[in-house]
Length: 627
Picture 1 (spheres, helix red, strand yellow):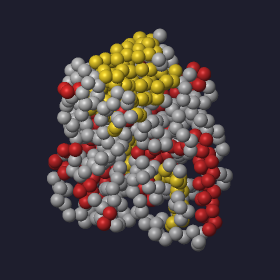
Picture 2 (cartoon, rainbow, N blue to C red; picture 1 turned 180 degrees about the vertical axis):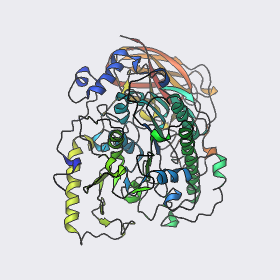
Picture 3 (spheres, rainbow, N blue to C red; picture 1 turned 90 degrees about the horizontal axis):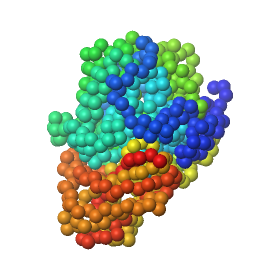
Picture 4 (tube, one colour; picture 1 turned 180 degrees about the horizontal axis):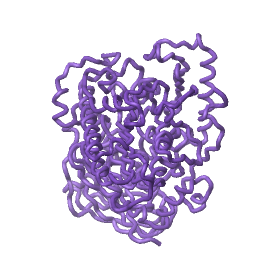
């Protein structure tokens, strides 16, 4: 291979500037396309709110292919019948491989949000600001340009239906990252999958039915509405991620099923969780089939590229082809996932791609297939797989794919994997990573360690540093600040171990408080709305909000004490990870006149006449007037 690997090219990776000032937006660090987008937010205020896709008629070429991308959550390579798992049947997913291309060796990240960032940008997540899955660490830097941005600029109508997980507040929200339409949730976990509270374009709505069925129905409606124009339909399902919930018609088959295929260490397998995951995968298969059928009905199949992949390895120890590792691991089983791409008449049916590839390759590949130039101010780590898919590749250079999880790195080549402990494994001969061949191949081990260390040095200025990004307020008319993004002080507790879908509870002391680190992007008048529950015995509690030296408060004079729900629908225990759910009620605390800039939003309870104050799910800061 001549020259350094593409991902090691020396290019500056400036620290993300977190103050959204005009100077930053006009700087060379911020791509012009993104500048125009954020200018709409800053200057127009409410201009980011998306109009229904069918009301606009963007320019475009008649020959642009439609693109449908399915991304599943915590589905392992082994969770398909195509890959030898006789515990379940996935005929629609199998058909994508039979009618298009199947990747033997396809790699993503160890956990959810990083994979989404790599797919959207074609860049390793260590470069993009995404370093975790919650409390702001999941946000994609504002100077990153997404696949949706590129396609929208080329004339596509764009929609996303499901789990976003790359930022909640504008301008991190999907409507500000190239998607005309968004329906789903922005967090990493959700506590209930049957008609839960969701959002449509930054507005809270109630879902209809099982989430995967609902997301699919919304995606189908989007396809129908945009059948006569090029569209990107992104369907990031939240299953089979926990909570392990699935409709009876899919669960009944697995409730008492004896499993033929088991994890390589059966004693580690939680059989009830495996059964639930398999049922959820069959539901995914059914829903993918619904979309494929609709494309056929609308005569769009021939001009639609369909991509299917998962965001990391399985979320439990279950059959995964004898690979080592699961979700959270950067061994083979934690990062190797299924991937299929179908484009009838262009990609040969039944093709098997044996070269290693990954989530970083999908954005450049899709743009290349659509013949849309990839113009980027930043280095792209992925490469277009078009020559492999269309059979035009004469030579394909060996490459390395890096897996990153916190401060641990693993490097995969076509033949080897260097694990984070320095072991070297010849994967085709030892997929279980049981016998290191480092002593037999010392030069290769040294070469991969050098690549690993150089990559660490590249991302160190931004990735291996303490996060210091406030939560942005005022870049849309309404800004949610979920409990996930807040910090409890005193006796206040979270309702569950994982922050993502939690709420604050057990608030008993007037000296306790809840804070959010925020940056107000536009000066003006803001209404403060808290989403709360309050027992009848605690009516009369005072709740005060303070920000930028301004305060406002309200006395809660009406009880709102709904029952908790969620765990009763679980097919296996959630183990305290996902919170239960409640239907919270909004209450206005009044209005604050705020300057632009960074400060701490503080929620206090100066008066608690009963046993405790309120439970808090959200604080919303809604701009009522610009200054």
